[in-house]
Amino acid sequence: MSAALRDRVEEALAVPVAREVANFAGLLAAERSAAAMLFYGSNLRTGVLDGVLDFYALVDGPAETGLWPRVSYHEWTCEGRVLRAKLATMSLATFHAAASGVLLDTTIWARFSQPCALVWPAGGENPARARVTDAVCAAIRTAARLAAALGPARGTQDDYWRALFRATYAAEFRVEKTGREESILSMNAAHFAGLLPLALADAGLAFGTEGACITPQMPDTDRRQVLRWWRRRRRLGKAYNLVRLVRASTTFDGAARYAAWKIERHTGVAVALTPWRERHPLLAAPGVLWRVWRGRRALEAARRDLRA
Image (cartoon, rainbow, N blue to C red; front, top):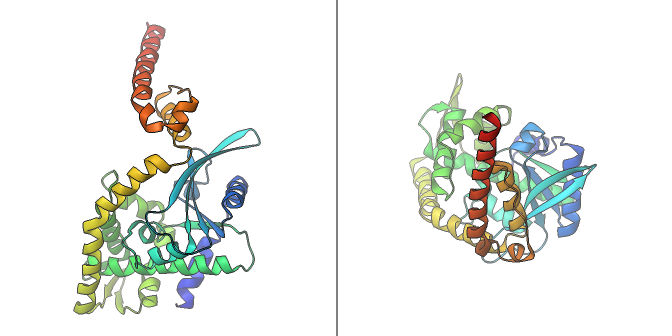
């Protein structure tokens, strides 16, 4: 691994976050006996505490078998303000393997080639910090090699990242607005500026430069190998992510509370959480949606009366 890429990743991981985020991460880390906590998503970029904070808890131990990560929803009241978090938990060994492209998963290396912060442990030398840095470098390296294989023969750095994110979003079973890759690049311009050449060099892939354009010099045999690797993951991507979503619907700790908060946030209709709804969120969903529909109609009628 080149010192240049590692230094860049260490600097990115050390970006300061709000005190509330760091404290929340510490509480979640203690609950999970985590070796490290990563923070990512739009809240990292904006610094706001609204919505749901996204964390990954990385734990010691062997790589998981079966599907991962385990997902849970958490709330914490800090100085009178309720903070909400979605937490994905997995072993650091699995995280590193996925970031390296060894596994069939496409989400880890695509997600963590984007900005993330190591919010726990805080500061100082720590074995977990070094391992997380290694894994994030591996994610960026994996993403860069595929970007070079998918992108044009010659283009700007954004052209290659754009090709990468367009392909990975298309391979996953989730709904994203058209042009999602454009917003990723525009909102994180500083993160991606100059990152691709560092990653290509770290991956041992030569390239030429001319002004703002680069020309990856990937031999045809290497390109075919990378594209074969990608085609296999692309074929399985939607099915693999669908199975994960189905599993998460039955194992998502706090799913009912998370859904109730989302419904009230987007519709204005409060959902009463009963013990039965907490235990059986899927079975409760039809009745809850019926009540939400009726509640929205009642709210709209009340607004019309006020305007009359």
